Amino acid sequence: MPAVTWTSRANDGAARAGLLVTPHGVVRTPAFMPVGTRAAVKAVDSEDLSELGADIILANTYHLMLRPGADLISQLGGLHGFMNWNRPILTDSGGFQIFSLDPEIDESGATFKSVYDGSLVHLSPEEAVKTQERLGPDIAMVLDVCVGLPAPRETVESEMRRTLRWAERCVAAHEREDQALFGIVQGGIDDELRAESAQKTAELGFAGFGIGGLSVGEKLTDRNRALTAAVAELPENKPRYVMGLGDAEGLLDAIQRGADMFDCVLPTRVARHGRALSRFGDFNLNRVEFEDDESPIDPRCDCHTCAFHSRAYLRHLIRMKELSAHRLLTIHNLHYTLDLIARAGEAIEAGKLNSFIARAKEERANGSP
Ligand SMILES: [Zn+2]
Image (cartoon, rainbow, N blue to C red):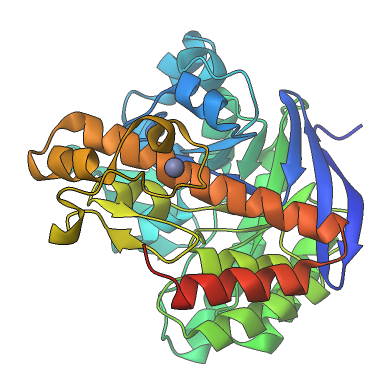
C-alpha cells in the first residue's frame, strides 16, 4: 500500500474533486496548502490553521535543513511534533528557493550560498530526499531544476532532462514507507517539453506529481497551455500539484484544467502589506475611505477577523504597524483562499464548475469593497 493514495469523488470536464489519504489524515481536493516556509505559517500558529480548516500545510526543506537543521527536528518528533500540527504536511525539496539564489548546478546537485550565514551549501537529489525523510512530512518532493522564464528552449530542455535524471536518483534514495515521494514536471511553457516531462516522470511511478516552474514570469495563456499539456500525460488516479500558484484567478484556471493541489505565499504575504483578498476583488485596507468604515472586510465572510473587527480598526492597526494586523489579515486571506477552493470542489461535485468560475471571476473583476 503506498503511503498516500488519491481517489476521485467527482469529475466535471477536466476538473476533479477527490480525497487524498495520507498517514496524518484525509485531504479534500482541490486543496490549498498554506505555506509554512520555516515550520511556521507567518503570523499564525497550528491552532489558527486548524480553526481555518486547512487540511494540509507546506514547509520548506531548504530553509529547515539550514535552520534549525533536520536532525534537531527529527529528534523533536519530526515536523508534526516540532510544530504541533497533527494533520498532513508536504515539504518542498528546495528546488524553487535554490533557483532564486543563483546556484551553481552540475550533475551532482546544486551549490548555493546559505541565506543565513553566506556559507556554501551543496544539495544533491539524494540529500534532498534524506533530509525530507528526517523532517518526516507525509509527502516529500524530488529535487528539481527550476528555470526562470523567458529562457532559451535548449536551457529549458536540458534542465527538464536533468530534473528527470535527478528524479530517478530520488526514487532510488527514498526509503521511508510512511512517506510518499512526488515527482516534478518541468519544461517551461513549451507544450512538447511539458508533455515529455510529464510522460517520463509518470513512468517513474510516483504517488503524485508536482507541476513546477510555472508562475515564474510567463503569460497567463502560456501557463494554462503548459498546464494542459502536462496534465494530459499524467495518470488519472494520482494527484497533481501546481507549485507556487495561489491567486484566485490562477487557482480557478488550474482547477478547471485538472489540477488538485496548490501552495503559494500570496495570501499570507499580501496580508502583511495590508491587502485583503475578497470575492469582490482584492483591495488595500490602508485606503482613506476605510478610516471610519464599521463594516468587516467582507460582510459575508465567516472568518474570525470578519466576525470581530471593522475595516476602520484593521486600517488603524496596519497604519500603526501593530503586529495583530498581520495575524488578522492573514486569517482572513487564508480563509478566503481555502473557502474559494472548497466552493470550487462543491461546484465540481454539483457539475457546475464552469458557471461557478465565470461568476467568481466576474464578481472579482467588477465588484468593489
Ligand atoms: Zn474574513
